[in-house]
Length: 408
Image 1 (spheres, rainbow, N blue to C red):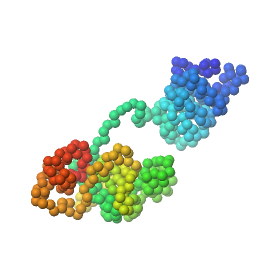
Image 2: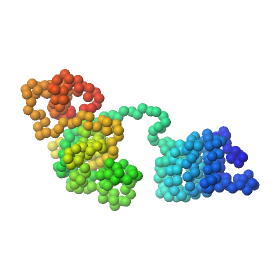
Image 3: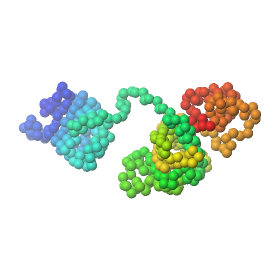
């Protein structure tokens, strides 16, 4: 009877604010104290049996300290959108983890001790939104619209676009640099990368933030050096993990596992370009290579932001290198190393018979690829010009030929 009086059918809302002082209950010497497990469980069961379509629930002013019993609301009141927990005794925002399955759009938490532990309003909102990403109103105040995907609404994500260079001159400059850089990086001896870095260069490595034991992750080799600012709070440690000067940068790179990068997977975006500075992001996939030369099972993905300045002979010199490494997605693994890059050699075009040399020159002119990649295509198709042309056309249409194939 008491709960029926407090239920608003037009709004599908139940108001249990300060229910322990309800006159009807007090007059009958009935105690309903919602910080007691049995009392809260009784309320949840009444909701399940009588008003499962509930959209609003007010539990303010009830001295609630824990939210364990409210976990069942996720299944017993799946339509709940508004929850008022203000004026209670919740001491930590970790209690919200117990009800984060609720699809709340409005939440009240003001006048709980947990509110005093946040340094500012932004961090408070961020912590709450981590649990309730659809939240539009907190403590009566409107929040910015949430950014994210509604998984219940099927949508078609726009396809990823290819590399963006800005101009052909920049494209040639960057692709030549990447080809040289990663041929050394994957060679087994990275000491020659000293020439690629400025004397005062800096480098940082980041891996995704994770609560899992890093030693159990395939990224364990990289976790110990990660400078993820969400995980590393100590400013001294942050500074130590930032590699300064080219000697320290290359020494650090030499300590990382040996690798084999899939050049064909590279995607490049130019961020900033002036006469004195070029910043670009390159992303792709790679495998670690064991000492015996065999690739390991795990395929990883990377993204690196290179900030460079002009160097001699139309080259680039790195002043800042930000490296991010994560495990590759299923789709990235499926597409990785499908078209292996040609094996580097001191002579890109070995001695060929006269007919093969003529065919190679003609194929390079017709396809637009350089001699190295043109020769690979012809060799893979037994020097059949027409078949090689058909294969090239199909691979190019599928976007499976890397930009480096067209650098002459």
